[in-house]
Image (cartoon, rainbow, N blue to C red; front, side, top):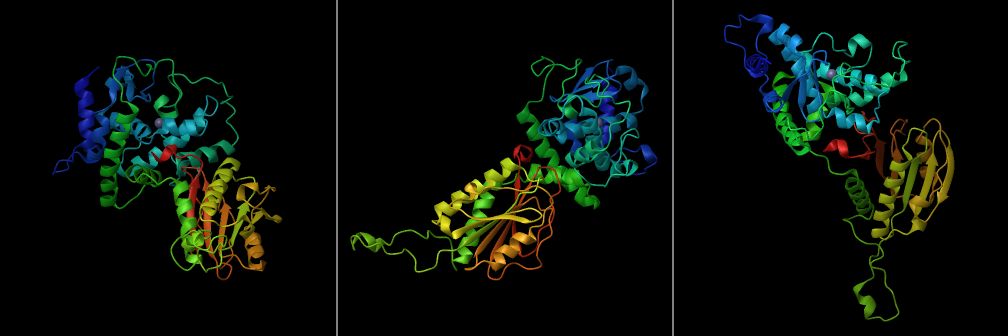
Length: 421
Ligand SMILES: [Zn+2]
């Protein structure tokens, strides 16, 4: 293994081009943000792979024959490609999408499309890598979105679902989480980057990558979402949702949050007489639930339980809560004690405007409306009079979530939070 050549390739990727720029298209690529990742990679020679693959522990498997014959820019492009699989955590994300041997090829293409998007502005895209444009797919989407789009396409006849993933299939387990027969196990004494180590590398690269793209002015969609996730870890949606409900109820009550049923301190003095803690009406809450097939049931149950918890903690009685379950038609309007008791029926298209119409017709009117939906719905042009509306969008990490009206407080609830780490 020619380590001098490998060192030259890494330097070609990170160094600035010489001032005279005589080297033209093959000039060094000036990507110092990659250095933390490039120097962590552990090279392993392996003639079973076609060119270059990676495993989840940041080992790169190099076909020596290919390596010796290829030019520095050619190897540089492949090296940047493999490195982005590891930076973007494609193995863990593939597991979140239940990628298996039969779907590995679609996932590999999806992940490669996003890497093409990232590498293109720096003229680093390996020519063989698929791109969104050439596949008639929309640009700047996430690997998860491309995977969903590709999964809907009929499988290529040659694909046949052989059910095996070998050393020459795809870009290695570092891209899809599926271990190949040629790869070393996590404990092999050839060195490995730990999960924690990888998180640290991603953080350093994310900060410098953000600087790199902001200087350039073009923003590859998925890579920038990746930066945001790594550099600004998200607050769990559960706390965001309960804080928003608390805030909305506070506004409805005309001031900051407080407990509606909290007994007055004078209660103990006037034995047997319970005075209300506040001379203010208890807010009414209406909940509109999207029960169309595209909404994840478990996520919906968790979100409703979260709202229940807040309402209970703030002392909003069940009699003040109305639940509408809606898809293309309002199926049921239930008055229930707790949100999770609602019997949710439906499945079909989605039109949340029907639920809002129900709220509009309600007497006495609701003070706070919480609408749980995947967001793929038309919205009314204005909120029901006198209400604070929360739009809780239920989605999957990595997918673009639909917009919500300006008049609604938006909270995004995602199926799992692992990818936000
Ligand atoms: Zn790849």
